[in-house]
Length: 268
Image (cartoon, rainbow, N blue to C red; front, side, top):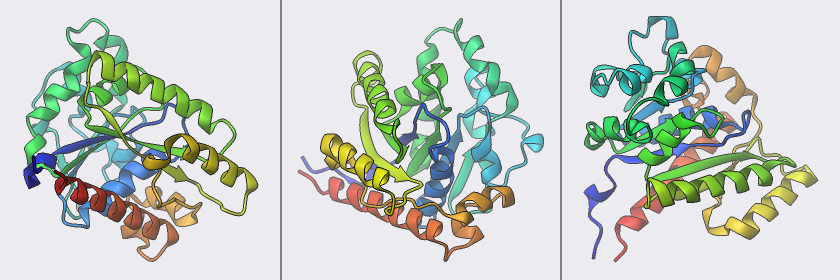
């Protein structure tokens, strides 16, 4: 059977790592923007109560009148809360401070694991890609993201505890596959804050490749000042400084990912 062009329409990818400070939100914002620049209609769902993806796309959180919280808890129509940004082909479903208490409220809700999946299904065909920026935990919000997703992208920092966290996450994915989403798969593993001069970096890279070689992206994200500066200006790095190493790295990542998906469409 030949996969058709539309088979990947609305591909939902969660960017997830239960460990904070690994470049998860940086990847969510900049990969979404880079894919949008390649003429793909994209939606970024900010599922992190900190709301950094929202502000990273130039949206002032104080001016947000409704957020993903309203979608999950009050069952408001998702398309009424999506914000069009000034960046090419990029829309955002924003986060808000009220999302911090959502997990407690969701405990009492029926089918609480599927709330995001149901909401996204109504707008899925409007987008080529839907990226979800998950909170740095494996709670109900992240569980909703994994249940709603086709694949997950795992950013990891090249440090001593990276493998321990990766093993825990993969174990969670197996559980989600078994209980809620049998088609869930790992999209890819992305090395962030990469410095090839460090011996530890190469040790971590080699160890991860030993276990997940086919899932590791060739593209890596280097430590880059422009990547750190861009969020304070409310812009993805490709718009803040298109010639920076960070911008080029995410451009390469977007190209690598889209090329892989294009090849998959032609599979028999």
